[in-house]
Length: 123
Image 1 (cartoon, one colour):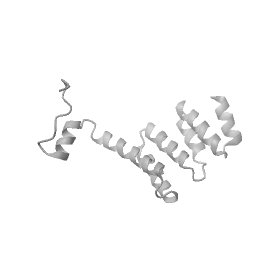
Image 2: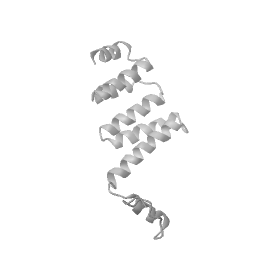
Image 3: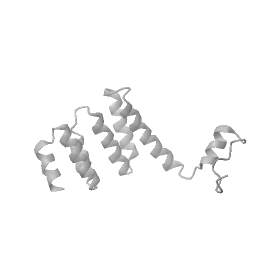
Image 4: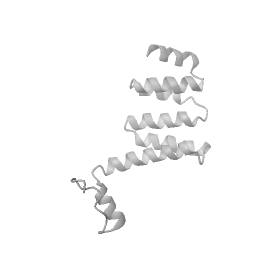
């Protein structure tokens, strides 16, 4: 861990160092240090994706959404930005509706005649 921290101090402007050390720091749950390092990126979608994941790990979907929105400004149709927004959306739906079942979802989408695909007996 101290190697990653010292490398980040010496070469924090290098994108590879930001991404690799940011990943190591986040894995060690040093989220604030990881975010401080990653925030130095210069328009890197990889850094944005990692920042979004760290915010979601910290249960800060609001900050994750803000980061994804800011990335939309410099990478309008980038797949990584779409994925980041989807990660945030999934987190928000799961947070607000944690007990929605697949059967209920199918009934809402297909009406009362939705196929019963999720029976416990497997038939």
